[in-house]
Length: 170
Image 1 (tube, rainbow, N blue to C red):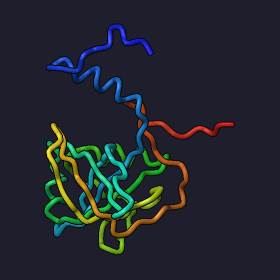
Image 2: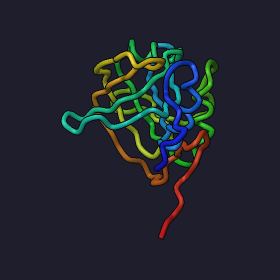
Image 3: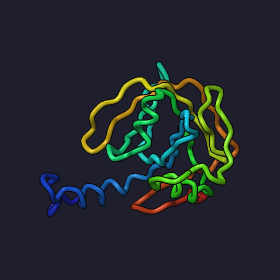
């Protein structure tokens, strides 16, 4: 792979090339949810990953500008809904600030009470373990308490700034 003209990632000029290069990494799309005293809350989170098998843990990268995460953080309990490929509108709706994101959205409760979005590929319910500074994001570690795969085997993906789906190969 040629390295000529590779941008050095320093200073204010770093954001565009960093975003462009990391956009080549395809990721799934999740909606993180919790049940607050005022009703269900949630936000779209693309930065999600497994962290540990023993003990079972996941991690999220949450924008420091999120107005929903502080509510969920105080509750110390949340669900991660792994969206199916036909749930792009849910991803877009939960990515917006303000309003009732659950209006017209069918959901159920997990064993621990977190909102589970109907039709998701899978869900994971977590207890907040730790939060760490991560630049313009907060790194969240969640201890997995319950989980289940749904009926949809085809996840919603995000690649190069656009939604994508799996294509059959072979």
